[in-house]
Structure formats: structure tokens, C-alpha cells
Length: 441
Image (cartoon, rainbow, N blue to C red):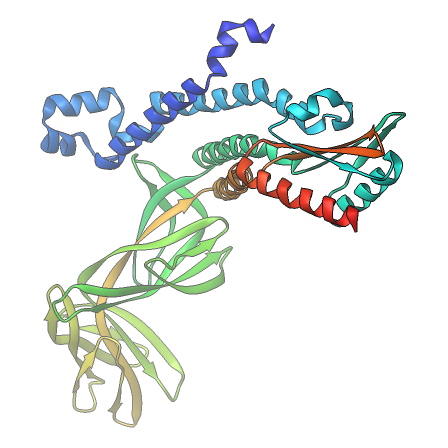
């Protein structure tokens, strides 16, 4: 019934799969060349008003979530399912076929066959050949008849499933994408040093996603090349949940932090005109951090201190060293130049302080949650397995027919392979030589 159903045959067609894959490839290239998720003004400025309107009608700015791109993916999935259902029964029949049921008069017509005469009888010859095949790694089944004995063995029957494993892997990858689209999100966070945030601004919308925990930026450090270009930047992040610090870790580009399935990537930074000043009373084990505007005075009332940054040396927009002024209103004020990562000991009267001053930064984080990523990884692994099976392994079947003949018996060795037939021919030649030689010995 299905074989004569035009609709079924259409969706089971390999041509449909090739056309769908080609369309997905071409549109993916377009989505790569045209920036995604930009405002209308961007496309109008880059491509003109008319083309920008066409882009929005066709959902090009958000192509990978557009109805027509998702429809192409759904069509490919449906095509793979129908194609597999249509062809797998035939493959299963080949996998489970009883080789001993094959008519003996058709063995000589197989692609690879050869025969020779032996002086021993049918039973003795069949017993010897069975032992030789077992020693060579085959597992022969046997069927005895009054005038002949048929041996059958095979290797790699399950390799016929390789293409269907590839089909399944594509479906698993798509399933991972759907799970990620439904249960995941992508967005950004901007956290000034010493501050914390608990929600993410989602890409492509004006909404936010609550994390369920808080992220604090403890510090941010950036290194520069001699020409002023950023060389490396690092954020120290602390995860806080239910008022408790869960973990603290440094992240940098290509070395993100993952917590509860949410990954934080270092993506950008921004410098302030403010300075982050740290002062530690080494004797009393007191330490405090202050955010101070440039050339503005700040106080630490508990210690009776006044301080501020009165000068700075910059490289581009970034301060590389600063001059700190500090006083306790009893001793003479102290000034000290500090590099951004340096600290210095300062004595005010009978008290010693450890001070540091550096420009304040905001860290920019890209945040992503993708619960389907492990499905995608599993699908990719499954695809590699399926491709290996489909291209580098084959189903090899072997028959040995021992028939009665004058003064002994005739041995017919025949076989077939669904792939790599030249390699199977060499295997048959080696096996023929083994059976002939060992049998005569």
C-alpha cells in the first residue's frame, strides 16, 4: 500500500532530502553573511530601506528562528523519519536473513565465487572446513543434506544500520536544538566591580531573565599591548545563593564559568573615571574598599582617614598608574604612586596601612543557558559512529557448499559484501588459499 502511495513516496524521496539540505545550506550562508538580531535602522543603513523592509518581511534578521527556516528543519526531520521507515524493513530483512535458506543453485551466481575438488567425503570435508572457518574468526552455521552440506557465516550484519544511525543522530541534534530554544536563553550582564546582579538582559528583546542566584564582580583586571590594544582581561566572579557565597572563580575569554547549567563568558569591559581604593589597617586586621571619583575626597570615618586620587597616568582610556593622597588629619599627608595591581605601605602616626588604587571597570558578560547542548553533543557523537559504520564497514556474507563428486567432493566458496567489494575479493582470495592449503595438509 505504501509503495503505491504518491504522498508517502514524495516524503520518502532522497531527492527531497537533497533539495531540503541544499536550501538549508544556502540560507545558513545568508544568515552568516547578514548580521542577525540587529535593529531596523542598522539594516536600513547597510542595505537601504527597501531591502531592509524585505529582510523583516522574510525574518532575515532572526532567520534561524523564522517560520520558514524552522519549517525546512521540520521537513528534513519528517523526510528522514519517512525515509527510514520506508527502507529499514528491507535492511532488517538482510540483517536477520537465514543464509542457510538460500538456494544452493544460486551460489555460483554471486559476485565472488570459486570451486575446487577434494579427495575426502562430504562429512569429513565439511567438518574440516568448519574448524578452519572458526579458527579464522568466522562463526559458521551448518545444514546437512544427503547429497551436500551448506555452511554459512557472516560478519558485520549490523553495519547495514549505519545510515539509519546517521538519520537518528540528525533527529537527536534537532531535538537538542528544540530543547535549548524552549528551555534556554542567551543574554548579557554588565556588572561594575564590587557590585552584583541577579538577572540577564535577553538578546533580541527588552525582557530580562532572573537567574535564581546572584553574581558579584569582585575585581576586573586588563592588560594591554604597547600600542594600547587590550591583551587580556580577567573578571573575578562570586556566585551567591540564599545569602551564601557558593564559589569564586576567575574567568577570561575562552575560559567561562558554568553554574547550574548557566555559562558566563567574558565578552567586554568598560572603564570608569572613578577609582577603586583599598585600605587595610594591618595591625587591627581591618580592610575596606571605596569607590572614589577622580580628584575627589573620600573618608573612612572609623579610622579617621581622608584620601583621594590626585593624579593619574593613562594609556588611551585606561589608567596604568595613579597618585594616591591619604591623611589622618594628625600626621603629615602622604602621597604615593601606585600601578594598577600594586599596593604600598603607608605610615600615618603610629598606624600602618596597606593601600592600593586602580581605575574602576565594569565587566561585560555574555550569559547562555542551553539545556539541549548535551543532546547536541550526543547527536554529534552518534553521527560520527553512524558515518564510520556507513563508510568504513561492510556486511560480509560467506557460503561454503560441499557437494558429492566422483572420488571425493566439490567445494564451492561464494560470498558477497554490500560495500568495499575489492577488499572483500581480496579477503575471499586469502580465505580460499587458507582453506585449500590447510585442507590438503
